[in-house]
Image 1 (cartoon, rainbow, N blue to C red):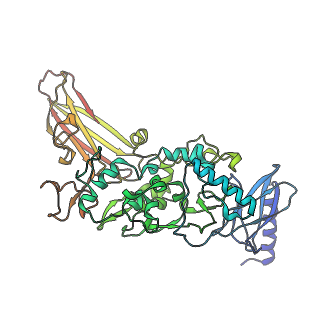
Image 2 (image 1 turned 180 degrees about the horizontal axis):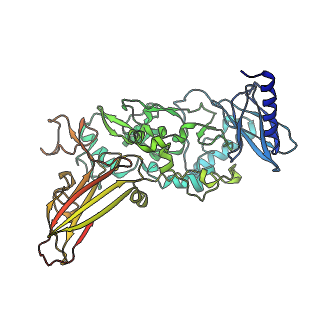
Image 3 (image 1 turned 180 degrees about the vertical axis):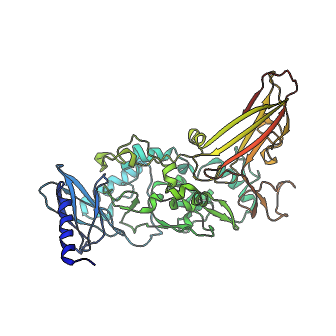
Length: 515
């Protein structure tokens, strides 16, 4: 160890150096009882300038020469706090309130939408009672809906996303109930047709507000009101942590640790440690891929069905620190406020505001940019030799991923100068699951090309099915095994080769195309 006197002088020099570059504010962070809080994060709001309190709850931070700044503070288990600071004001005290402990299973979820006429009447009546009695317990639960502060950006973006429609997705409902697009029943495959006496765990991902309501069944068709909003704002912003279990047998809400406050209290968790417009607090998980794992990392009967999180975990993206949010919630580069200034919003760098549009399968450009197709063709006498390369360039998981019924089909064809299809001499063909029948009706089995999918097969050979050959591909809710998995992993590449016979030796021009 060095000389203690030298260490003391060094600390004094470093402290002096930190203060010498601008106006320095000294402060203290305490709890409700006035006890100091060490290791709290202090930040000049909406900037990267931050520091931490020492073991006595003290801090020093350089605020430059601005007229006034907002200093915010956060510590694990505490609400975000703040104080205004300006040159000449040498000391600042920030009090951090405790987050309500536990998880209130009787919590009444907040609607993302503006209040209805009846709810507005309730708000006005409650405000009148508060004014008359001075008791805050009369406050209406409709007054602080999400659109109150976030209608123009966050809620509007979320409304365009599949999360907002998870409880009403027509494909999902038809697969659950065993119906077709017109609502006719008895159409296989269908979960309720295979398991008429079981509700399943589907609601824990698709209709979580219904699944989490005490004394409700897991039958998602019984969801009403706010529960039909799917993955709502309030649901996501009550998540304290998630439990990523190796067996993956607890999908959705079953693996989520919530922080639902008791009646009369409120807390919103999120990715900002300097958000102070409401009862806000920071949680690191909002910037981690683990946040997505409960609904995107599930196994049924031990067979991995939804494996996006595991695929990402084993990919180069995970090793590079690129999260799900980085790709699926990229900032739009335009928005500067999460909430308008009159609602407590603060101007931020557009690069720090994630979009709630959640780019995914519904975004054609996003999907197209993920895969790169390369096509080469050469003459070999009277034969056209073709090479097709497919690269998963931008997806942080396999392509395709998610529910196993998603698939990707590559079609390769060669045409002569008259537009006639040339005979295939060699090369792979689209497997049977690509559809047996007329290509113009969307059936591609047997055509030159390939199929990319996770194909499931029933484990039980005597499982009830409408036709004897309804075995492959099997729906993912049954007890299945993975028959094949030809999907392309992140940064992976697939190359296939084809040979087509040219009928006429005088053929000067043929067309090769792949899609």
